[in-house]
Image (cartoon, rainbow, N blue to C red; front, side, top):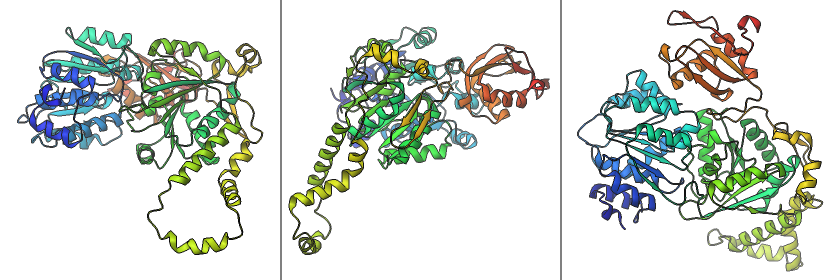
Length: 572
């Protein structure tokens, strides 16, 4: 089937054909005819990288009235990166359709500029939940004329704690004609939102429910906790052409492992919540340009990243929420290409692997951690391939041939090859000369011998072989806003709630502005009418209390204290 047969108008066909799209993907083929009606609620379940943006973007661009300079279509997505990517794609699709204006609104950029862009008139708004609510509360955007709402990566938004925000947005768009929900998985939270706000939605599933991309090979390695870092290095070295993302649970791990790998000569950068937006954009720019071979990231920091040709995803540890695995693995194996998703486990984590296998309806392949000799052999053959395929068509190499012949006149071909190999592989050969076997050969035996600190993996350390570096696991929880481990956290009480005009996004921004803390120190926020409970890392609790307790909001004294002890700032 072609895009013409789906009912796409000529001016949009011209745009997508200029981008090289000739045939619709399965999600586009099934979704576009339904969405073009404009009145049918819709649920589309498909993995990332299957063409969902065009599936909802083309119908929206066709349905809007370009003569009306008011927001008619609203797309809500979890992250700044995804927001920018969707906006860019929509502008490309509509490049030949006159009068279409799309505005992206997201945190980390000037809200004043975004307000000016909205006032100039836009039919399509692409937004992250928090910034959109800020604009609604400032009365900078009116949702009364919104006909169509798209919730993209719905499971990700709910997993990040945006449920209240999404419900607020839906309540404030009373005249909508339809809601289009796209998600990689269908957890109970997503199902509840669809039941509450959607009317008999047309639902399609591309592939099996929660299934993984068939182009992805899911592999796992079993080692001891203390050898996790060495196993990571061994996997990287065994794949010399790797272009991938390494996922860690915490930003502390991401930074520590990155620093260790950089010292050992690897092309890698970290992406986590402590980076400013400028730093983040710089890292992502280098990764997209392939100036760096590896990116190490937390789940929160990596959400919304869309990079082509990623060969490997490596789970330094499995995610706390097993459904997050689907999003991690979905970074590779895109656009019909093959990819590999690798997980490094201890024997104690195998039960979680079985849970993920059930979730994605797929089987993990158990792999042996390569030996030192295996790594050297793989690197050697990779070098030979590079040598034989090197482009010598440009450059005046022939000028130097006589000199080279004279210099190597008394040296045999075998000796030249040996010297070239020595120059290239001396470091590898020395490093892996007496490399240990990192595999866990007997799960029961390894369980008994595993150090106590492996329990829960919270106190785990990994010593970098040959360089004396110890990587200490942070005891802080993952950066996700929607869940908390409780370890090292305090729960604070504050006498502000929804009756004070707050919603979760605006309240979050308020307490962060007051305390000058970053959102990564926060856990779950439970808002009530008259008060709120806030989970926060223990080390940041004092600063939060001192910054808010005793201050005034709309003439009322703010009271904040430790929910367990009832102490005020005077106790700190």
